[in-house]
Length: 91
Image (cartoon, rainbow, N blue to C red):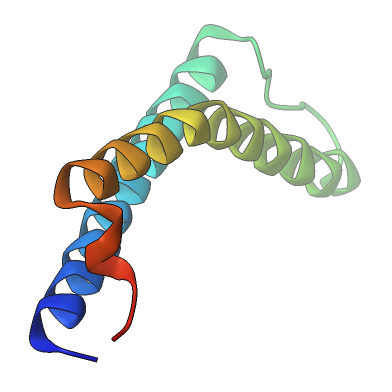
């Protein structure tokens, strides 16, 4: 691969990584907000309830992250279109 191809792929991976980090941070903030407002109420009582609560919180976080995935995909495709899809084809 030429240096132009390597640079195009590196920039695309860096951009998608940055977008994924931003989406993860937003999903984490939404999950924390939902816990504080009582949407996902922390359990009271036994340790077993606490252990069963953590997968519920993890699933809520994952669903919040998944809602942001179409934005990441759209921005990555628009960036690849801006660079030119031909720049990503190894020569």
